[in-house]
Amino acid sequence: MSDLRFSDPAPRRGRTGMIIAAVLLVIAAALLAAGYTLRRLGWTGGRDGSAAAVTPAPLAPPGAAPAASQTAPEAEPDTAPQTAVAAAIDPATLVGREAMLSAQLAALEARTASITAETAAAGGQAGRAEALLAAVASRRALDHGEGLGYLEAQLRDRFGALQPRAVAMVIDTGRRPVTLEDLRQGLEAIAPDIVSGASDGWLASLRRELGNLVVLREGATPSPLPADRLARARRLLDSGQVEAARAEVIRMPGANAAGNWLEAARRYILARRALDVLENTALSAPVPATQPA
Image 1: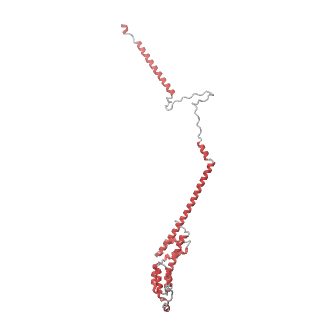
Image 2: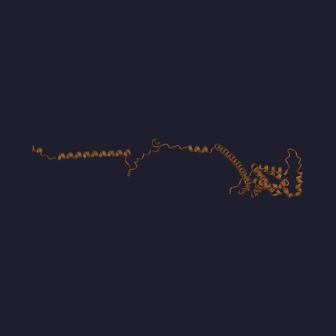
């Protein structure tokens, strides 16, 4: 009994070491198998860990046809650009485009010519309107007895080449304006002298008085008596008929005493005739437009 209780444990330690060695071998074999599997599947990277290891493909034996899986078919070249270039340089296409561009160019030229003509017509109408406005403004200034001022330059620019005499007459009258009111007042001032004719002498006055005692005339003929002529001259001035009033004053006995009045009336008449000429010119003739400074 004592031999069994106090036996040597050396055999038990030997079995434990064998078990441990076997476990380690199994673990080592498992690790080797796992590493081999990972390497075959390409899960392990290179040294830097960024790229997978690539197993080189085996070389094909000489004379053998390449496998379909190893050689990828070459991509066919893209023929679309070549087709587009061919279409672009097609003679028929070029001819069609040239014809289209020619038609567009002709349309643009026609449109430009039309716009040019319309612009010229509008410029002519504007020039006529400006010239007419200058003539009307000049008439208004003369009717009010005012100077022309800047209108003198406008009249020269608009009508100087076409109606120089009319322009000169209007400008001269504008520097010495005569109005209807001036003519009325002047006629009243000389009325006693032109009616009596005292400036002709007593003998001429006596003859006129004797001649006026008996006057034979038709019913429709105006009375030749000086008083009647003066009354008609006043009415004619009131209606703006200066030329007819001037004709009545000329036939009166004392017309020699009305020299200044007759000259003023003549200048008034000539200035209005000149304004009529300028207005008609502005409406009918092509008037040049003033160039901007």
